[in-house]
Length: 248
Image (cartoon, helix red, strand yellow):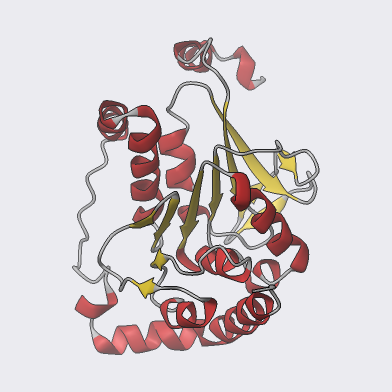
């Protein structure tokens, strides 16, 4: 059975029929983190005319970590010349530091209507020079790196989405939903964003109150930082090296 054979999905598609295309590109790749892109796909996917492009170099399956196998829908070469939204979730350091990925992000961010960076995916934008002189946030472990990427003001974790012009940056998980809601409000209006919130019943309640490192058990934060340390070293090296090669 093909998706087009499902009357329920055809009904949902019909709601947005006749709307002008609105192109949302989400950069994925081997090792991407699904929770950092699903909010963007979910919230923006509810809007009329939205076409979601899962962007990668090829159409070959890539593993969202862990075991979230995904087939990219649109290659870099096939990507629309201008995206209405470019979104970058957390990717593996080897992918984020890839010069082809950075060059693609720089090119599409330069003309995109809105740019979203989530978690460590924000560092791709930094490597591409997009964060220079901007107000930015990211995941807990990426925050110290931002100072080396020309950022004007680093917003600590726990303060929600940082908005600077058409740039929306946020921490992991719920950050992808909240950045997407803000873009929806900016493009489609507040009522559309509120309707999306109603539709997906967005009402997060942290069970243990430790979603922000500043409020969490210091021992758990230290354990988390130790797990991430090897990746953070690679993220820092790749993003800072790339940023430093950009012509002033």
